[in-house]
Image (tube, rainbow, N blue to C red; front, side, top):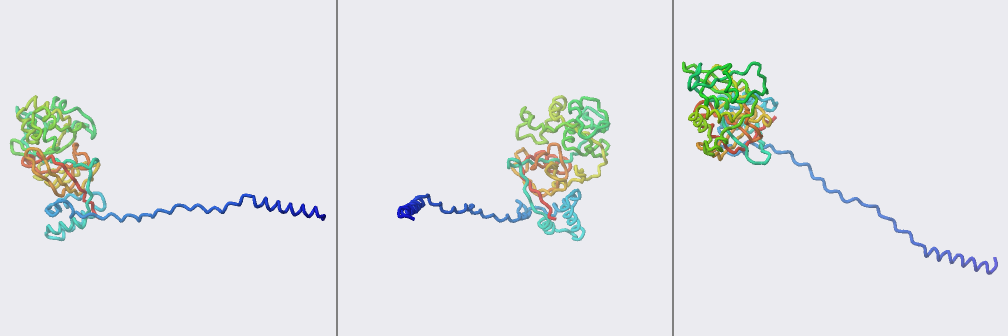
Length: 367
């Protein structure tokens, strides 16, 4: 190679080095994107602890033996396996323990049940009312005072059938009259759904629910207060009945017609006991409640806590265990109960003054 050629080669090599030095350096390697640290996983919540009935307000003052006897008599209608198991346990205790003592009865409930509160949609209190098995005079034929027929169901009646309203039925011919009563007595017999009749010759019969006209129940207490017929806090059952009796005739019938519901009856023998509820079990005074079957089941054991009744003649409070054995057209909602007070006028006077704010708990049988 000539000298000029060697110089050219050197220059070319130098130029290559310069160009390489001016080139953009390669970017450093990119570290992989790290995911955010995982949030710690909360441990699963501990299982719910069963709450003993011993926490219920007033549990220490309860007559556990009376409640035990009421449960043992009525629990046979329960259909859930756990309830049936506790029912058999109660009846076995009655067979083997003579007698069952209050302490045994309390231990039975505390070992066999847990409690769950019932609640309304808004969290407020529900309502406790009461009912009874009335005893009224009746006649085999009508007269000037006993002029309202106790009617048997219409021929061919089917449950859910909608018939005429009260006023129209009462204005029609008394087809199927079983007995005759005072108008206000029949009205309250229909509200209670059953009762007992005593005839002039001393014979007795039980008037049992047999059918209805498919119309809704409408209470007349508020309309009577709104019209000034009774004071707002004086609308007890006894006060309403007394007003109807004092205004017997067209005036009273117009007020009673505000409730379009009408009940038809059958007459059974009076066995001297208490009527059966919708569950088919005889009711126990002050230990049976009517409830809404959409929220409760027949045979459920219920704790009720109600105070603050404001009707004239009302007792201060009601508290204790009861068995769900009945229902009624006006008993609707998860915290709504109608307490069976017993049979006769005294029970009726008390029942008519019950309208108390209510709290309820369900006693859930343990498997």
